[in-house]
Length: 262
Length: 262
DNA sequence: CTCGCCCACTCGTCTAGATACCTAAAGGAG
DNA sequence: CTCCTTTAGGTATCTAGACGAGTGGGCGAG
Image 1 (cartoon, chains in turn purple, green, red, blue):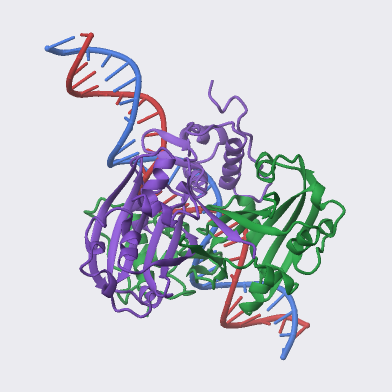
Image 2 (cartoon, rainbow over the protein chains, first blue to last red; image 1 turned 90 degrees about the vertical axis):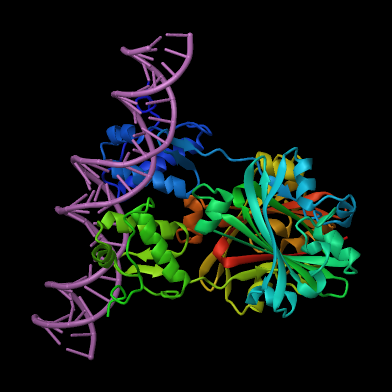
């Protein structure tokens, strides 16, 4: 039996001033929220909804596009429209840069992925010297040129974040930090070996919709925002020694912080 | 002279396999990024673009809907489509719950708004006892019923966040915390007076697209995600004494944290 | 039985209109 | 001058239909 004849969806209210396509979207959303359609399940096809509601196809598509914008559903060409499963989230704990992790020779990403039982990967590594943007220059204390380390992180084959680290040339040039592989413990371990003992980090967090570039790089579904995190590392002399600019798929992350109450 | 005859926008590439409405969106996006259209400025009308590109109106509208989903533009019925201005952001510093602020008798929100020179407001206050959700119960250590304090925060008349605090009844019932106005320093000051000296906070941060309810409550524009923050306050006996569930308009906030490197 | 083709179903894109409603400015009545 | 109406120009919604293209199952040829 078709899901439509079984009362999953109601009728339209022609007296309502709410647009028809919104009413349809409302009914589908409610059905999803109530679990009438489960995660990964296929919604009625456009043609079925056209029949059920007696509207034109564009109106039905308009409804779907609302739900897509909310990140509730995703369409697959030739197959149908499906309830988007909520992917398991990865937790970034506030002690992820603790020295004891570095001393074990693992980078923060690997440590956390292993703990979660996932298979981590890093790709599209690029290391080069370049001109610092205005913002990066300000954060690093008025440097003109920087070493930039770009990479993308994947979890079980799915891209989840990409990041660029910027370091002042007078610190990084000619060191292992300028090599594709910075060695055990990552660049923070190298910075400490170079005499820049790390004191603290400052992180800024924003959330916004992704640019088309970011959609490509992270293979983002419609209706998935990104978390934009900018971290600055300071050494014990209060000098900023690294800025890391990270863009994360918001549906893959929960950030966790611990704050003192004092 | 019309912006269209002045070369702001190019032509379509009929040989490209990129959909026409995407090509148009690309050109508009690029023009915005390059500053050809400034913040708040009106884009060419649908009719003008129909003429310029020689496509149907639905195609042009489709392009606009892409840019809206990206949060780049917003349409005003009867007026036009405008480049969305990036609103000034409010910075939440990681020391916002420091005891020295409470001792000055101000709540965290008021302190920060005043510092930024804005006019803060709090409305839709509701205080009541209710059954704890599964999640809240877990976070508070298996309590069945809680005191819930709901409120919405506005800055210069614009709603920017709404929050609900949940407290165990055995702590809050019958105290000033159960009153609409919790007094100077907010509920954290009252908790400390009641013998629950605060030790630390744990915060969880997610970002996602808003529900229709949240769009209404925060008057969110299209293409603006929300930041969902869940904070748990612990007293010095390591007991969770409050859970605060906050939903913020992502275009109004930058969260800032400071992490020790140790 | 297996392979390859065809076809039905599905979403993606685009056209060409019609009607409704909103906004702002111009112009007329009082 | 003030207030209301008109009008032009804008977006919002909806219809009806056409063609393109990805998916998967059925069916016939070998």
